[in-house]
Image (spheres, rainbow, N blue to C red):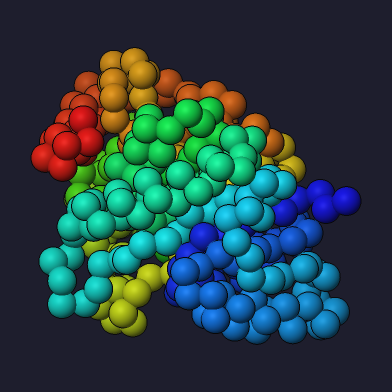
Amino acid sequence: MIKHKVCIIGAGMVGSAIMMAILASGLVAEIVLIDQNEEKAEGEALDAFHTTSFSYVPNVLIRKGTYEDCRDSQTIIMSAGPSVKPGQKLDRRILVETNAKVTRAVMKEITRYTKEAIILFVSNPVDILTYIAQNEFDYPQHKIIGTGTLLDTARMRRIIGEHFLVDTKNVHGYVLGEHGATAFITWSLCNIGGIPIDQCAIKFNSAPIDKDQILKEVKEIGMKILLAKGYTNYGVAQSVARIVKAISLNELSVLPVATTLRGEYDTHDVAISVPCIIGQEGIKEILDIPLTSEEKEQFMASGNSVKAVMKEFGIL
């Protein structure tokens, strides 16, 4: 019996990169690509499937499929819908109307076959699409997860690690809030190996970091990549693979992901990123971490900004 089957909805640049990242993890037994363009899904699946002959690639069944494959899937990844393209306004929120329709259509199909699988939302604007999926369908909220600011957090840690010349995995802290313009960094909790970030310049004999510049770079780097190559896919693919690993191994890892808040952080009726414990059942717990008064204001402002967009499009 297949132990871990993953369905990826959307076989474009993002979906195919997610497929390869999950394949490389060695933690799943079957990957199914689902796309309106069945020929594209079949081509991507075959191309990846033929790599499994190599000794360093796990022997995973990879194929195209249909929504019926969701019936016995443990994890479903939603990456369908258009992305921002060069030449458009560089704001993920312009995708709200189109991708809200896509999300509703996809969730309608998924719920025909399962309410047991964990669904990871990748498509943008990920906060709003996560909210729609969690609140407009009779599906367990803890089983729906938005990738949110997990990638933003990884980018922030990379930038700080490079500045102080330390392994980025030893940089701790979060980017929280919206995956977008109103995201913020929890500087009060940021540290390197336990050394508070404000003491790192002395401890590492380095120049102090420019906090405003780092946040600016974190927010803009995705669009910079998009303008350079036409799309972004590798970073978000690794973010998805990280969440899938936490689910597969029941790691109970703390990751910043998007979910609807119902009073946590004094916030209601909006999905934005907060640290959550992730395991085999999805979101086990939302962690209410300590924030400074300034960070609380930034958090509230981020949530209110996302709410305003949802109201504009009749989602709230």
